[in-house]
Image (cartoon, rainbow over all chains, first blue to last red):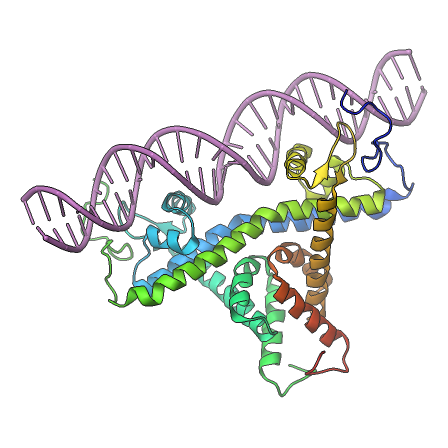
Length: 175
Length: 175
DNA sequence: CAGATAATTTAGCCTTGGCTACATGCATGT
DNA sequence: ACATGCATGTAGCCAAGGCTAAATTATCTG
């Protein structure tokens, strides 16, 4: 009843198995698996982004203020303190932070290690973006999202390029 | 009852308002707002990542196979077809795709536009990563996640650098 | 010390994005 | 033409990550 059954093929192709070419599988099947792997990696990174943001921020707050209150975390992240509370509970469950009722948030060893890794990546990305000519504010904002998706190889390349661009004496050969 | 109340301050500082310095606000308040803005942008990008991935992939499938079946989308993304079904329903609700029962997925104008923007960013990021020496597979995988967080300024810088690195005649001046 | 202010915690709600299990529809093969 | 297989759709579950509202606890102030 919705569409009858004939003339709406201006974009909604009928689901016949192979309308275009007979040689679809050999070129497509491995590519599908490869794509799936890449998307899985991105999905995985998305899941850890929040944890990394939290521990990095908590580490920053402790370094700056001597403590990390959930209200400060909430203000820095721009979310409600309830969201922080629940997320911090998950982080505690996952062994990244420790909390005691009505006390400031503390990082575990694992949390500190993750925070340092995250900060290092963040700095590499941010410095790199500035080095290639992105303004500081945009660099900081983009780094905030990009850092979680940069692999070790990419980070190395970023560091190489940053060094090369910062030291103006080298042009086409860095190391 | 849980911890008593006194001696666990090896990391869980008491929640006194200002234990470190009296000049906390002027240096911290604007920074908190700035950080919140950056995190909000990253959060926003995270929300649109999936939509962009879907429309870009659907566009690719249509270009390659002449149609985009949800089962193909599911295989490419590495998720179940039910997840695809539900996500595509949301995309339809948001005006990015159109679907009819048992028909292939079609992109709306808005969906096609978003797909093209996403693909362009994807290519810029991937080409750039390869240009700075990241291997192809890692570049593709990292680009998958990073593309969604690259602002226009960063993309321009990427293009500039890619051109500079690809065309070896220019060293310190691109355009 | 009592009240006010601020922070934390709890309770409950929503959307997104993932899943399994099952039901239905389409399309081809014999 | 009908069975069989594959694709799609439905129902229901879960966790994450967001929210408001209300209750509880700390801390500061008067």
